[in-house]
Amino acid sequence: MIRSVCLALLLLLLPPLTLSAPAPAPVEARVPFAPTPFVGSDGLRHMAYELHITNYYGDTGALQPQSLQVFGDDAETPLLSLDAPALRHWVRPSPSEDGAISIAAGKRLVVFLWLSLPATGNVPHILRHRMLLGTEHNGSVELDGAHVTVNAAPVRTLGPPLQGGRWLAHEGPGAAQSHHWGSLVAVNGDLTIPQRFALDLVGVDERGRAVRPTTRDLQHTRHSDWVGHAAPVLAVADGIVSAVRDGQPEHPPLTAQPEPSSLTADGLFGNYVVLEISAGVFASYAHLRTGSIKVKPGQRVQRGQALAQLGQSGNSAAPHLHFQLSNKATFEGAEGIPYVFQAFDDFGPESEAQLFGQGEAWKPGMAVPRENQLPLNDIVIAFPPR
Image (cartoon, helix red, strand yellow):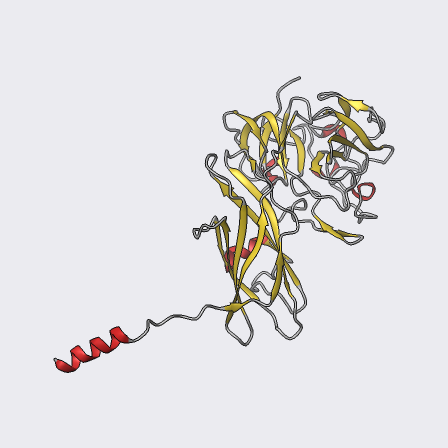
């Protein structure tokens, strides 16, 4: 008994054991373009942005990201937590099908981050990132920092870019694997994502089909077989025409496209119109129908004014309208910025397969009116008639 009491007293006198924290990660980490909150068609507030992590030293060896947490302000409860399997879906370059995420010495990893916050409550002013990384020889190291100040500026509220009808908002916000958000453009010293919040608006009928039912062979359709082709394209706001291009041919639908000649509007957009709708805010409309553009550079336009018709020019596999908002008139060097539409109806999600009548038939939901929201990826919407 005496020995047990003495041992208990000795344990009380000893300093508490502490587990050593992982060593600081030998990486450079930053957020090159601050996120701006916006309200999506799910009613939540979102922030979409990217965390760039560079394994700087040549003798570090490969680093294996094991987890990532995002914190707001001084809170210790994370806004987002991703383990290694979840991270696989949000990084570039993408890991091999069965391989773990790895950042080789001297290489960079880009993590695409999608934060969802309640519709009410405070939005954090500063975001902080904590990532645990495995090393080849020295256990785990930890990144704790990469602070970024949230852009609190309100997003632009826009009118409809198309008149009436139903449209699949394809490759839209929230899809990090899409060719919009997932495309980093490196040109002349800038690494940006011009299409971060872009939409491909594909016309659909009441059954959710992009091609009229009289068409039997999808591989040999004409433009007139497509529901949205030649639809009027409208100015989403008052503005000044910044750039116009017309005269580019429209490709046959669903045919292989040549590699773009350049990562510019001329190389990608085909026929296009760019509007400056406020200082440093540009609305781009791409893949327009040949010969349909009604405006000229320098011309003032009003919200709702017809600009052109929907087509299939440029780097486009099928008739649709590519629409985006960015902070520069040019494609290269621009950063995509969020926006909301003043009003649209939401008919629920639809898959790309259903767009062509494949798999289970699409069943539209009851139209849900949305106000001051941005359509998220792969939902069918309808804009109010003029």
